[in-house]
Length: 124
Length: 229
Image (cartoon, rainbow over the protein chains, first blue to last red):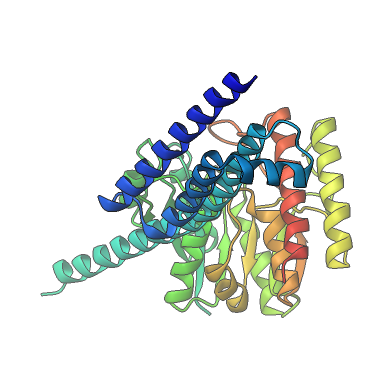
């Protein structure tokens, strides 16, 4: 029992540390805007802290009535993923609206340009 | 009175010529604006050759986005009346006048051409009939008036509505939802009986499953609109 718990712990630490490293690396290279990075940073930090500290993990598990503490990690990861995808849906909605506006503006500008060109060719 | 007829067109190269001719014959004093919604055929070329105003969208936005582009044009260029007229040939140009008269008399802010105010040739399938009935009941309840043809794309809008639609117009299946939005913004609608032809070219994109999806989606959108502040 002791041994399997340790494997879970090692895996959890390795996983959350890798996640944290990836997030930091993406921010450092400017591939992830800080705005979107915040949730990722926060969630990977929380996961890492809980993976490192057995007592903290057990304390929170008992608090919400979870018998097998590592499954709390899954729950937290799941909740964070939900929040992140919801956040993305909102962002995408905004982007698609802007995209539509741009396309409409482009069509209106092209038409205006055509009109100007035509008036120039017909004028003496 | 500056009048513009907005013709949304998606892959309508075959029917566009007839539609424009028909409009020129019956509504000679109105400007015609074809909104090419990213067609993959020669719709834009055909429209340019016809010498009408053309708005070419760089990609397909869907009927809502395309119509709104037309309303934005009408708003910026100071039109008093904008008429929505399908590019597939199902609307009858001689009836445009009827819609305009309703507006000029100040009967309402938007006048909708309805297929169901007088007996016509239109014989919808059972499910279609059911859908039409449900929309009609829901919309009549929200607008507190009898609305017979909620999905009609043959409409005439006054300046107030043009300005409103230029700012906000629903995207996917806009006819029903836009009437609710107008009502919420304090504008009124009226109906005028019209006849609609069978499509000249192409097929309607509506299948049974799609129309069920359409109905649920539109009803949902309508209720969300009611919840919005």
